Length: 164
Length: 164
Image (cartoon, rainbow over all chains, first blue to last red; front, top):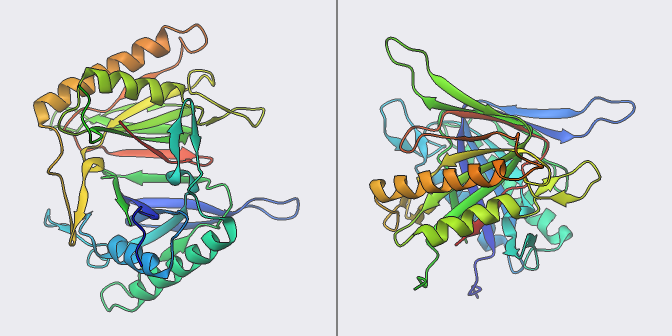
């Protein structure tokens, strides 16, 4: 059964490069980062009621929608570019404005959200690495629940929001 | 009369710094950029039916919503931080997924969109510079219709979408 309200959200931006912290510095160790080159940044948020069916739709849309500038001026999917993918958990995308604050009443609980997030990352990685054209592309992902310290460089983000 | 469907969208992200091209390079001149330091990036999109009333609501929400990390761990508005503001036109935020492409049937026409965008930028600038606490902060803005070549650095974007 599909919920009447959308319960997954992705925000997509093109990039030339991006760098994301996946582990904060400790007393003993420096912070750890992942990086991608040209490709797609995928911010992900799950709301209550999200499930694996939604995860599959979200991954399919992120990887197959024609949003990336190809050399010939046409828009192609990140799989066809082929380009790297950086996945960033972003619970704040689930918010609604109430007065002067954002409220997150519909966001999924942390444990379920983390499971769906991992499934989303695995599915994206499997899909990218399963295609001849994109098999050498990077799929990198932020750590769920962490502060998403990052930097990016783009020749036009072309920001897209898709709800599921 | 207010439209039943939302007709303005802003996407907000915190940043430590950001740099945006406002004029592409020509044969005679190098590209021109604007930069901001710590503050807020505001992506703006207008749909058909947007008007000055919507512009005022959008500017108020962008500047007054408590989305910025203050030193004490609390969230404060960009006016109270006080922080800089970078406004980026982003027509792609008005899209809806149809098959493998985004469609923009509800986006406003270019002329009306440009007028509302200018009004939004002017109102944000006036508001920021009109308050004692934020009067020395920068309000920078991208050129409407240009490719938004940019880079940013953040300690956590906390991406928020608000519809009006």
